[in-house]
Image (cartoon, rainbow, N blue to C red; front, side, top):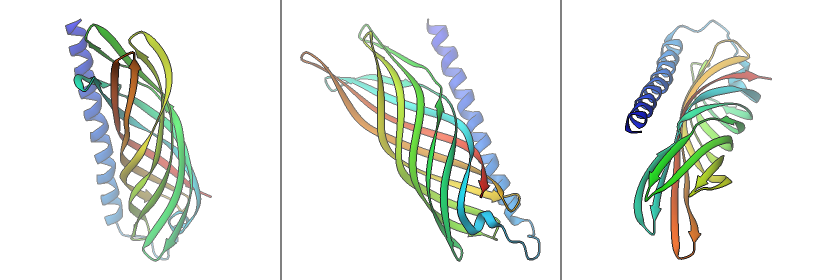
Length: 225
């Protein structure tokens, strides 16, 4: 059992390192692309604003901290992939821009914690959110931005042998960079953090507390309409 847990831990560390490396590599690519000379009289319609949509994928690290009657039991991590799409509307004013965006997709992952003779398990299934984006346009070809908004995560949870489906509601913040590769297509990379707050489960006089959060590194293709 211990060897299995060690192997899972090593695997999570490797996948976490790969996701971070991939995300920062795209940020570096954005910096290099923006430093390159722009074509004369180029007009990137995507950067000018309007309706847009796209597809995205990445790696998430949900972390749930369990406490029993305020005594800490440990952390449960359910690392996994996220794949989905998004749609939004952007407005540009000079070198500043803002946007509203909706996104959703599928989630994978499986985390388990054994404590006080009981097994706790979480499996993420779906994710959805709504955000406001604000940032700056650089050289008419790229964007650096921050986002804030709402995040929902649907999970299947097994708590002390009782299975249930839960919807976690929380706040989400993040930063990102995007580079236009044509007048209708851009690539982007983001890091997001979501906090889902605390939730209590009661069984007689016993109170189980769960505090959940999530970090996501993801990349996407953006298409302007």
